[in-house]
Amino acid sequence: MTACAIEPTTEDGERDPEEGGRHTGDGEPDTGEDGDRTTAAPLVITADGAYAARLARSGDCWFPERWTLDGPEPYAVPLPGHQPEEPGTQVQPMADGQVLIHRRAAGRHTFTLLYPTGPGTGEHPLGAIGHQDGGAGAGTDPGGDAGLRLLPPAPCGTRAYALLVGRRSTSLWLVAGGAFGPECVAEVPGRCSGGVWLDRAGRMLALDRETGGRTKAVVVDLGRGGEVSPLLQIAADSDDRLLLADPDSGLLLIGSDAPSPGEPRLGWGVLGSTLPVRFPESLRLPGRVLTPFAIQPGQVLLPESCAVALRVDGPFGSWVGMWRPADRRLRQCAAPEGWLPGAGLWTADGELRLPYATPAVPCGVARVPAPEPGRGPGAESGPGLASPGTPGSADSPEATSGTPAEPCAPRPVPLQQAPLARLVTN
View 1: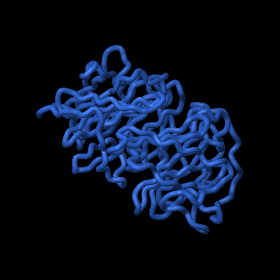
View 2: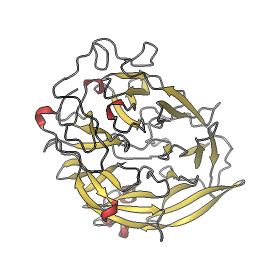
View 3: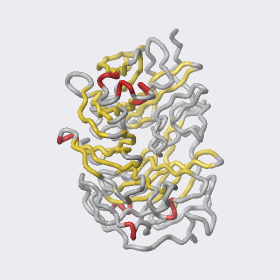
View 4: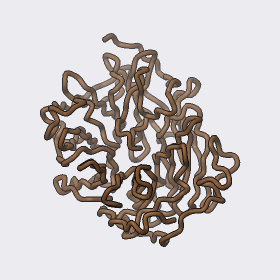
């Protein structure tokens, strides 16, 4: 394979908005394969919002690109290697500005840290994982090396983890930040997907585990040797996934088919609370798929006041939704041109930042203020606005059984089981 000439700035204008971070046979890289609303965004952002990374394209060649987001203006630095990257290559930014890259070659998963060195790219190899190292059944798992996936950036920014799915179990690997290269730190029975951090220390990790034909979220305690405990058990025969969590407030965004068997619904709860999970009608839009991707941080003890950003996929493409548990209304607005769907972050003071790339602006960030508490969707919002009488509008009735959640301190303990009689509340 020959090397490509990489321009200082690039565009990525051929993304299918319905595919989001998943790339197809047209040459777009696949960055996730869960199929359960936890697909990785095409741009991965560190937990502190300082850096981001993606696999960008120049002509027919793919190369890693690092974005710096914490300066006066965002800018991108290309990090091309000696040869183009494969479309399935995964990248992840680190807190020090380096970029972790996961490559697949000769039946092995290799991990390397990339960093800019003047006109070139420096590489610091971290080691590799072979199929025989992947836990029970890994060597014979159908799908082969497609079973390894980088988890979302750890809150500390100095470590990176990956899931390697086997036939009967899933191994959790520390692939960057360890002392001696990749290290298996936990073995979880069943096939796991997802991956959500529950605390700022990077100790409590939630995974969606499939066993016995059902998927339930569990917690892996990395401070106790990978001890596994239940997190969500809404109904015995439901699939309950954790999609997003905020360690400051304890707010959880949950996907489950418990209230409507066979139909995944979005709900919310509070980590450590004894109150049930709620599934508001404002997060149920027929013919559209809602995927939460960012929660407003810094709202300690105020989970109902946290602003949540959601990607909305519908017949007209992808756009942005903004919602608060206390408001019970979904505001929808057009995404900026060239938005990297599902990528974005909130600031503590309530500004939503959406990264985008266009031919004219190859590295840009749109800034959208959160709607004021207690106010519904505005008339200026973009495609697919809810009209009066439809879910998410001011006239739409909400289920009101149960009582509002009381704020509680975030604690890294499993959410209590929710009684079926109170599944759908406000």
